[in-house]
Image (tube, rainbow, N blue to C red; front, side):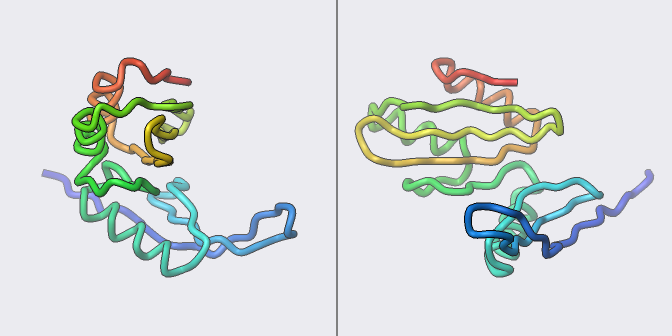
Length: 133
C-alpha cells in the first residue's frame, strides 16, 4: 500500500477591494486553494475543522448548529422552513458551495463541500435548490 502525505499550508495573501489591498490567509492543500480567511486565527480554525471531518466540508456560517450539511438540512426540514435564494455552485476546481437563506428565519448559510459523495447526497436532499456548474 502506497501512502501519500498531503501538503497543507496557510499563506498570507493580499486581495484588492473597495478598501484597497487587504490581507487574507489562504488554506492551500496540495497546491490547490481551498478557502481564505480574514485572520490567521480564522484560518487555523477552518483548517482544524476541515481536518476533523477528513476534508469533506466546512461550515462557513450557519445559524443552526449541525454536525454536517446533511444534519443541517434535516434540522431545516424538521422546522418546516424553506430555502430562499439558495443554490449549489460547483466550480471547475471541484469545490462546491451550498449557500442561501431561510424564508422563515433570517438565517444565511454557507457550506464549502469538498467531498464528491457528500455533494451528491446534499444535491439529493435539496432537490428544490438549483445546481450551478
